Image (cartoon, rainbow, N blue to C red; front, side, top):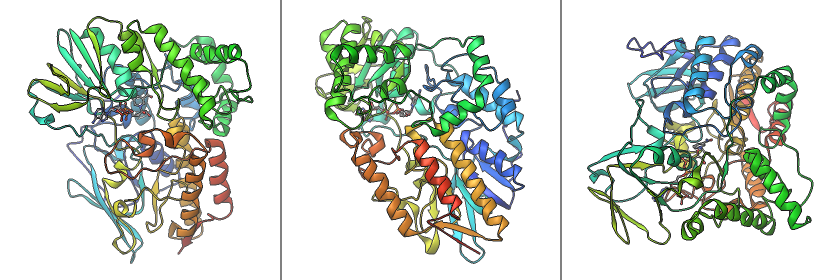
Amino acid sequence: MSVPAQQSDRTVPPSVDAVIVGAGFSGMYLLHKLRLQGLTAVVFEAGTGVGGTWYWNRYPGARVDVESLAYSYSFSEDLEQEYPWQKRYPTQPEILKYANHVADRFDLRKDIVFRTRVSGATWNEDDRTWLVRTEHEDAVTARFLIMATGCLSAPKLPEIPGIETFKGTSYQTSRWPHEQVDFTGLRVGIIGTGSSGVQSIPVIAEQAAELTVFQRTPSYSLPARNRPLRDDEVAEMRANYRAYRQQQKESGAGVPVVVPTKSALEVSDAERDKTFEEAWESGSLVNLLSTYTDLATSQEANDTCKRWIHRKIHEIVRDEQTADDLCPEYPFGTKRPCLDTGYFETFNKPDVHLVNLQRTPLVEVTEKGIRTAEREYEFDVIVYATGFDAMTGALTNVDIRGRDGLSLKETWSAGPRTYLGIGSAGFPNLFMITGPGSPSVLSNMIVSIEQHVDWVADAIAHLDHRGLRTIEPTPAAQDEWVDHVNLLASYTLYPRANSWYMGANVPGKTRVFMPYCGGVGEYRKKCDDVAAKGYEGFSVAA
Ligand code: NAP
């Protein structure tokens, strides 16, 4: 494996067919795919290497919670057959190694400009191109602008006064240093108990002299039961990969599961307990989420699962008050649940403390540590596991100007408006990979990424074969799609939680459920149908 490019010799072409923003799993596959179609492309990447989310999120314990054999590219059968995954759920370094392997194998780096953040892009109606600008004042003209910027890539620090005054060391999980951080003997405070907190807390607790966890909202979490992959299961998957990939495409979340047929309310308590127990034992989030038909839609059904998980937490955590504090009240699955390795058990350690911010709110960060309404805690290190401006942040952080100077950020001020989560009216030849209004974060991201990349590449080929130059959603199709996405969400319990799915974690962000929750199989059918009907709902022009 070659070392990620440092690129002191940056070469930026003045003009390409496509500018791709981001060299994560979306950007890498896009580059490969467009090249195969004979197009020229350049990828701008803010980091020094490929991998996107797996490049930035290097915090201790970072790990994927979809199984490696499913969370991997399907576009190359050779890659699929040869890549030696070792673990059921690989760690961040293992996934980053895979990303680097892909970059080398398909010779991607030569068209990636690292250390370069895209600052803005302006549509030029006269010659039907985008002018893309970077922080280094590069200016590239492109027929297509493709935002492969990821859904969880614009980090968010909490809005707590005094963060800059802390005299110790601060870390953010989503911007973790490349070198190992040693917590041995240190007093550590961590704010945030979403997936990043849940994964890092047990690992930090192993080293730190003392760890204090500041929790605003508890998370539902299941034990991952991670383990090395057995040779026989890898061989079996490799023998059946095509059929498995097809099942992924047709599934609800990009991971095939046994589709439930019963309501949680139509079975006996004993049967339900047994079903939940089996899902818990399986170490798979989708298994638990798909135990019954109505966990996502009926409060009463969901309550059965909630109560069952509360019982599990109480069985694990010895201190009653701590166990109570760790039990979420919002419906299971309406905020992103987590997979953990020893999370709840960690709170049995004498040197790990939980501070429930709902009882004692956080007041400020001080020179010495963190002050709550009750007292000041002194720390050597503070870790912020406080999440992202999800789904829209990475898109609206770039000053994108469409027709007549239309600003994407302003157009989306009351919530994102897209057609299929792929394009937005007023922004010709702008594509988003896993944009808001697509299944994205409710799915195995790699499955959704590949579907979008293939769809976008086909759309470009459609234009090129017909001598057409622009494609853009019609306002009517977009309105209809936004309404449809909202309607589906309204049938579910999702809007009942203050989640990043709803934009609720960012003060001032409009509350609207952003992903499409109808499942990747249904969504794919819709996208294929749109393409088959000559890109219905898009205006396509010369
Ligand atoms: P997150 O789920 O948004 O969690 C952020 C945490 O910080 C929440 O507990 C939040 O509390 C807390 N917080 C934010 N602002 C705060 C404030 N001002 N005061 C106190 N607490 C505050 O972010 P994340 O853990 O980075 O995860 C984001 C998503 O990335 C996940 O849901 C998942 O989709 C993905 N992810 C996946 C994996 C994996 O697959 N293995 C790992 C990491 C992340 P509230 O809940 O009250 O807002």
